[in-house]
Length: 136
Image (cartoon, rainbow, N blue to C red):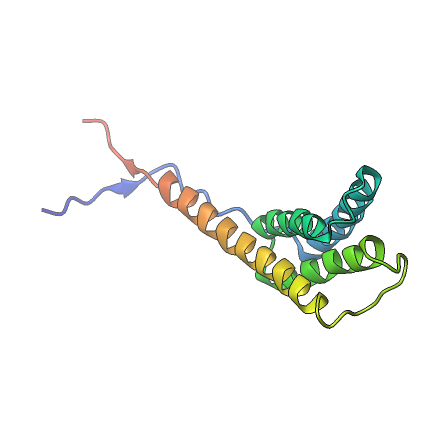
């Protein structure tokens, strides 16, 4: 048997994603700070570790951003890693055996973070919809 109920107290919407320029600003500043910190701690000789840390940053930013912000987020993180984390330091270079994989890893992290964020927000909004029981 189907029982009809009114939904009460309104439905809170899924949180609005952050604006793309804000995501890109946080990505650049965060990547710059993380690569600088890894350099101070002596971890830049292992670029795989730096790539993992920047991928986590891209994924976390993806959880708050839109899909359109993912390519720029990946590019900004890659630029900071390329310029500050690899030799020659301070120069933008392209290593055909390494950089496409790095960019793909950062882009995948940003996309996976965005998908995860959208699903988590949608599930939370779905759970907030509760039936309204009128007093008898």
